[in-house]
Length: 95
Image (cartoon, rainbow, N blue to C red; front, side, top):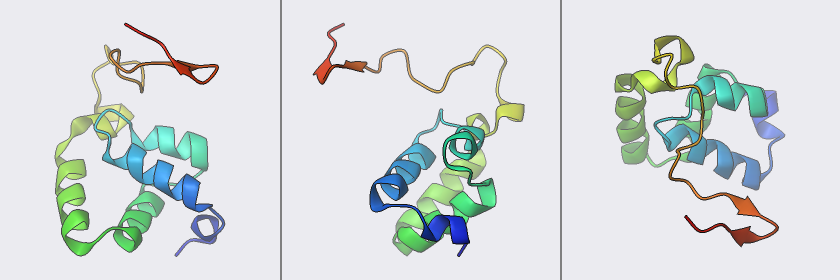
């Protein structure tokens, strides 16, 4: 496994896995935040997930065009869902 992956804390690994599962979060966002390439994310997911979860994620990630910025529609210019609540000063804002 990559030397960079070994240096990540458990909290960072959990966040990367969460981002990888999100359909709207592209691999480029993970690279920007954690300096991990798509191949590194795939290796991390393969190592940390159960085999059945890995197969499910891999199939899903390959079929979703939103996981790559180059394949995305130009109308999508954010990583966060508009329905997602924002957290400010430890309080969740109401819609």
